[in-house]
Image 1 (cartoon, rainbow, N blue to C red):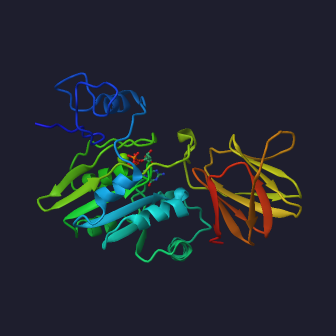
Image 2: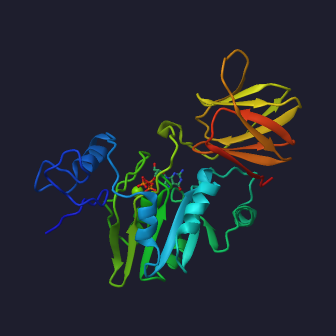
Image 3: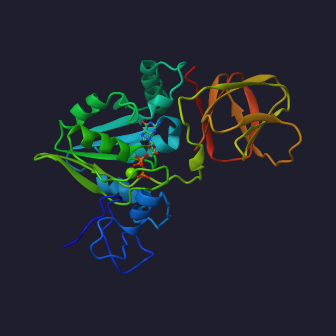
Length: 312
Ligand SMILES: Nc1nc2c(ncn2[C@@H]2O[C@H](COP(=O)(O)OP(=O)(O)OP(=O)(O)O)[C@@H](O)[C@H]2O)c(=O)[nH]1
Ligand SMILES: [Mg+2]
């Protein structure tokens, strides 16, 4: 009989130490990677079984409903384009980790803003697995379908939400959650009751690196920096933004663990130029976004970013 690791969804195998699902013990419940993550918090990187396209194909047009989850700080055209590629007539966009949302953003207006900015026609729901915001509403929705597929980019909180749902049904779930990218490796089917199943899915992979130690510990406290011509701003240890020859105001919506400051004496090559309209957001993948008040040109030392109109 084929056995599946309940932590990550991989088929257990006992031959190839370097492949997913490996365990040295024939009677093991978890694969070795999940065993180490669960018991020693040791994180091992493995080759993934599915590409983003594979995951889209795996869940498109399945009977039931699709719940695409994104982290509040990781909303971008890239993420929404993946959501749009999934072909399904019952599709919901869930924005998770809204416990991060700063007080200056109204949750109701934020939904309208996301729908109009990213041209989303379907349902958008704000949730937080951490403080159970809208969790009961989500459970009612999910249990109105026989099959619900929970998908989204890695680290968006899919497995955490599924575990919360299982808890509310009095079921113990063994799915592992962590800040490590790609904790869940394969489809995991969970039976909530006789007729209702939810499926955890492997996360879509980001094509940029992020520092798992800098995820916010609490809600985002915006930091505003007024700039003079040619000032250079530094975000974390590697992002530099050079301002043009006007004064301006930059408000950072990023993790409290990421430092933001002006630098004066660092030699850096900053070559990517962006034209910014008045009151726009510069979204930097993996970090969050920066509200820029005045129309300007900036130089930035990464391609992992995009511009959108601002909520404010
Ligand atoms: N602040 C906050 N953190 C959350 C919330 N939901 C999940 N997390 C955290 O986000 C991290 C990733 O959660 P997972 O549930 O493992 O994410 P996933 O989408 O299943 O990730 P993969 O399996 O890698 O695709 C964990 O450290 C969770 O504790 C939330 O609502 N608020
Ligand atoms: Mg997961």
